[in-house]
Length: 53
Image (cartoon, rainbow, N blue to C red; front, top):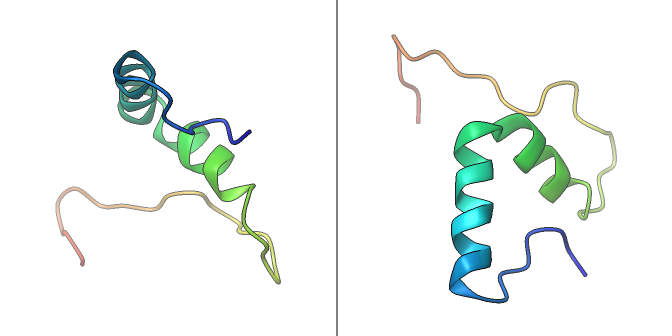
């Protein structure tokens, strides 16, 4: 089972809090379940002063 498979609303809330409080751990764990040609160097990279979409 994937670590963030949502099984209940309580589980959703727990996963959401984890994604907010520990985003690199959360998204890194989710990304581990995908097949990659090359593993990433950084899980997240952002600049709050200059948003980029």
